[in-house]
Structures are given as C-alpha cells and as structure tokens.
Image (cartoon, rainbow, N blue to C red; front, side, top):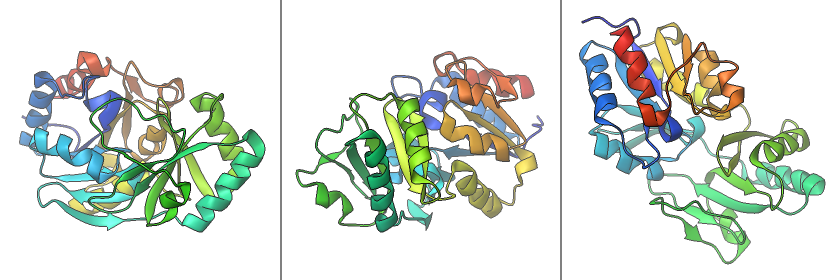
Length: 265
C-alpha cells in the first residue's frame, strides 16, 4: 500500500479528538494504515506537554509531538522534551500592559515550561470544564515566578476573535497573539507558531514541507497550513482557517481525518 505523503500532521482538539476527548476506532485504523505505508504521523497541538502526554499514552503514540503552539518538541516514546522555547516574561508583561491600556483589565493564566509544568490560573480566569489540571493562583505575581511557554488572556466582554485582534494591534512586534480555540487566546514568543515547531520535528525525521499533509480547525493552524504541502480543514473549523485550506473534510465528530486518509490510501 502506498501513500503520497511522508508526514501527516494533525492538530488535537477539534481535529483528531472528538468532542468527548477520544479518538475513534476508524481514525486510529486510518492512521495505523498510513504509518504501515511508511509515513510518519505527528501530533501538533497548542497544548503544552503536561496536557498532551496522557492523550499520546492512550493512543500508544511513540513518535514526536509538537506541543505548546510549537514551543516544545516532545518524544512521546521516551517521555523526553527535545526542544523547549520560553516566553520572555518582561516582554510579555509589557505586551499585556499595552493590551490592557486599549481594552481594560484582562484575566490571565500561564503555562509553565517543562515536562511537568503546571497551568496557573489567575483571579477571574474561566477554566474550561474537563480533565486538564490547572492550579489556582491567589496572588497574580505567582503566574510570573517561573519560566513560561505562554500566557492565556480573557476579557469580560470581548469575544475571542475581537480580543485576539485588539491584542495583536496593541502589542506590535513584542510578542505574537493567537486564537487557538473557544475561550483560548494566547500570548506567545514572537515568531513562534505550529509551523516553526513542525519544521524542527520534520527535520529530525528527515521529512520536508513538500511531503507533509496537515489537518486542523483553528486560526493557530494557519501557519502550519502555509508550511505544509496540503492543508485540510475540518467541517467544524474556524472560517479563517477554512479560507486558507486546500480542502475541507468532515468534522472531528465524523472522522474527517479518516475520510481523507482512506481516499489517499
């Protein structure tokens, strides 16, 4: 069985995972067939390693994963962090003050660097229900007390797209701002994206952009689609991603990844 790509890059939430956090048997089988045909499968997620590891273990996934919006390249089989990029906390603080000068006070959470880095949640930040652990920080200064890979921001009134747009306009070239999912707007190191992390991981695998098929659902997947040979958006994807995708498949609930892989196989 032959497969036209050497690398299949999949986002996790809203893409590989169904809404209940599981991967369907059909999608597992399609990915297994792809790897049996000689291609590599790589997970590329906004989640940092501590929020990704249990999913990878459940999948029996032993390859590389790109986590933290590209900040971390993680070897799932060896449980090892291969590369990790941190956010300059002084720059992030300056950027946040610029955003708050435009839109008023923000609620913050921060993702700490490392294999076991906690996500610290500041006062007023709304944490999504689910299994992902977060630590509440009474004192906002605690968020800044150790190296971070990103800061999450929320606004009491602005929706995700409006907040991301306002933040992007306010921060200039200090940091990057990305909308990564419902209720998830992030401040990242300037120039960091899923594409930078994926290109590092692909180099380790000896694979090029031209050999890569990518699946995603959110605006943070746009750089990955720009890097890869082909970008496939899920039916449930954000309109900004659909606009740059070469193809739109079924939703994450309806095995959208498997639909495309089965056709290619």
